[in-house]
Image 1 (tube, rainbow, N blue to C red):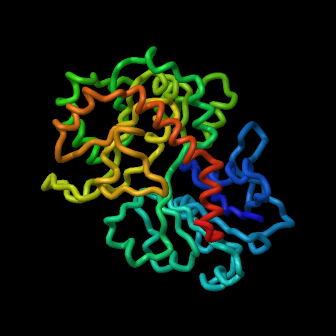
Image 2 (tube, helix red, strand yellow):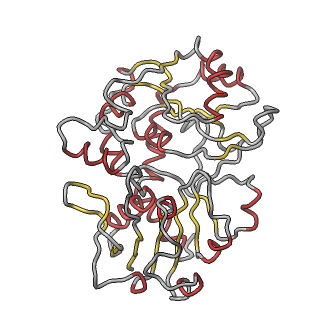
Length: 350
């Protein structure tokens, strides 16, 4: 099988990090038997060593599967791609399996032109979204754990040597994060102390890792969202807050579902062996192909019973949750199992 990826070229100020494309390509390579092609060279795993390489002798319509990451749209590219037939229907009549990898917080894949794709793999999928019912080609997907994150977290400390805290450090403000800080954290502090610290030397647009090398290469390609100091701090705490998203009914506090809930942080927390804290994903409609179990793989907060959640945290074995969560994430959402799930899906084996 041949897979062709359209890889959007970064523009000034926007790195164009295409996580889902990287995840699938890494998985295809690990599984073997799948040739990877693209419209340009993209994602240097080491200097000059690209995961995606453009072959001028192989075009998208030579391949059985064609994939486009939503960063294509974020970076202002035309749809369909410039060198593909227009209007849209002609692009989708070449006989390929066409896939849109929707990583966007605010999705556009509800729009009619995305119904032409065979599959739309949606991060942040929530079963309570009204638009889901009319979009039969949208399926739940997950951010997952790339080889970059697995490599970056390999030096995490043994659990008992870590700070016994819930680390809560976010770059972007979300309503859910405001809510847990205001209502959950005061209840939690006597049971599990909060740590809001940020090590100096990372987090800013000019904080490139010193000394160049692999970390600096990743920092540039991820739009500064990679730093060894960050992973060192993450790997030194027992629990990590991975809350994120928009609450369906913020005013009434009677939340039915949470949007924009998936991100780097849950999966980095899993990979680093932290007890990952989020909302109760099942309760609030958050869906991915294989669901984690609350209180087994992560700590899922019930927003309607914060004191009950805190009482249970006080009795929980966070070390066991952290280890089981890490194993679950790698077994189900590292590159190879992600790619295998994708292949089974498009071939009708699932």
